[in-house]
Length: 83
Image 1 (cartoon, rainbow, N blue to C red):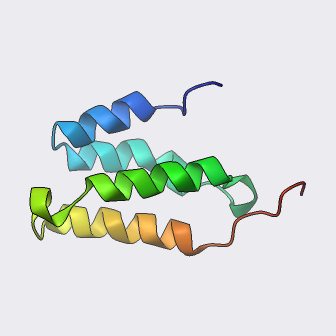
Image 2 (image 1 turned 135 degrees about the horizontal axis):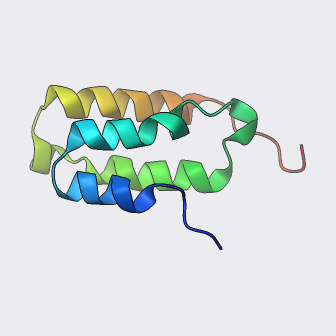
């Protein structure tokens, strides 16, 4: 299984509290057409959302904006298997 493109960069940026860099690294994923939003991407974004905890980042505007984008992505329907 190939790693998710840029995942190391995104993870490192979140770990280093570089939220703007993490948002930039996530931009190509968040702009994927619905037909390409496979289950594994949704799972990975759920883990990223979990890393952006209020205990760590408080009420940061950057975190709220990124969480909003991740939430909007997750609200879109996933493609049917085999389509």
